[in-house]
Length: 358
Image 1: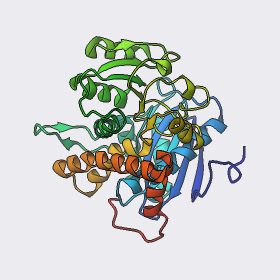
Image 2: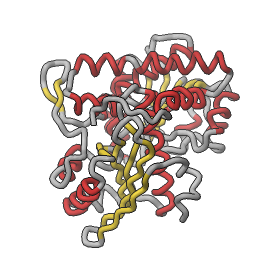
Image 3: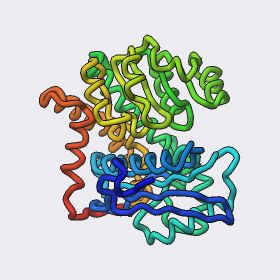
């Protein structure tokens, strides 16, 4: 298993392999770019089939975080970490503390937040060993109360804002009443996105590898449950990937009947060329790191002194960012993912750092 020769390694600054036999921890931390500030990105825990799969995932995710923070106008770099294991059976306090010690050893070059398979509670355990975690501070809600530091509500809302922009561009209407949406993955972010869509009058179809999460969406939101295999080929307006990456590929793209792809999952395209494949099929794709940046925006504001109104304005700005990508795509006749990459690279390739929350 090569690292420097891995096609996803590209121009990463640092990759750290973490091993602690005492707790069973096997983890990888990837730091892609720190030109704009410390690398910040989630810590994922997942039962990867192989170490190669884990390495590929963390490399692609960390690169995506660089692009995400730059496109969102944040003074942060890009990084990510993955813990290899089943979050429902392998997670222990000792393992989380061990991960915290590895984070501490990097001296703040990488800051971890919650992600698939980890929670705010898990990050608080890591925080017993390091100060280099984020998304654990309680924040003010619109009603004046407090919510946990979990950034997933902002991720979901930002995705909803971006989805509205995509529907307006791709379907010619800003009205979501009766909109048919297929959501793949109905966890923390996917379920909250489903709530926003349901409140706006959309009709929902959902799938997930965990039956209890599907049942919640069916019982509480009136969604229709489908199998993970069925979710791609449904006759819907929007396909919203909200699970793991690589779901838009040679097998799934031909099956899509939706005219818009707009979801919260990271690294939705299996390969860059799949953005062109979607474009050729007349499917409007909202680039993942542009539409799902609400979480990193939330965490950034936490680290600079939380201001709910400023956060809300920044989240609403995702609509304008997505719209600009679509406009440039039409003008330049390029796939939306290529346009988004160019916009982000204009901001982070310069080695001059800017003021950062980190």
